[in-house]
Length: 334
Image (cartoon, helix red, strand yellow):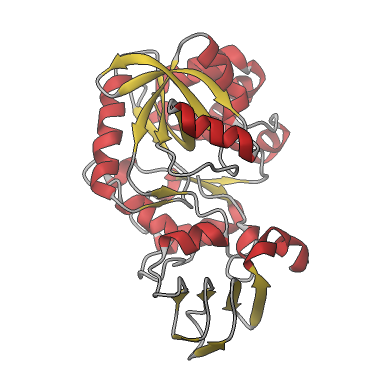
């Protein structure tokens, strides 16, 4: 899934060129390229699919030339994750009615791809011949209010557990309770299922979306049908009702995952100096502490006397903002 606009990372990420197409870690690979890289050995290039906004299709082709042209699905309108995933899975079923599928965002980071592949392999084995959905649950390292949670139940085989309930993003006190209880995982938004399972579940819970997908596959009329699809997340459309029927499971995982949804999460993933400053680009810190700078296009950046600041430069736009105020970046960038 590669259709997001990443507005919380302005000016680095913009609606015209969002974060999934940017080398946000300064490692020489964009986020969508790193997403594909971690599937090497699990999925052949001809079995990769990308769903994105139609304005990003050429960028996808440039950054991922190994993707077959008809495996890049161009959304004419944003309709949330349920129609996005449904369109991909109906298209995959049309090519291979027995396919086993992994759905993943293109704008998350995984620091341990070897462990990622091991976990995904386990999940694929579990879903291959079962009417089951496996969501990857990340072992929480802190009381986090920015993620949804999965409440785990009993064992279902190997490392995979049943899911008792999905929980929305909690307040800080609730997040602390989840951490203390020990049976709550972060919902990473990475799903594994057989294509027969997911198309059956969508047909059962959201017959309108299923009807739309049948028409898209039979007529090819994406332009008219897709924008009229119900706008709903896969969590609400499928995960919550399926979990009540005992069809959803989770694989606990610890592979250095982050959704990199904000500057704080990027600061957490980047190397830091002895004063907890992190940078991408040629940056020199003097008497600074707890700062994050992303200025890969600048020749040199020198900071003095700042504590707890975000500094970013891209395409002539510069952001200087207290880290404590980063939730206002969307407001600032308008």
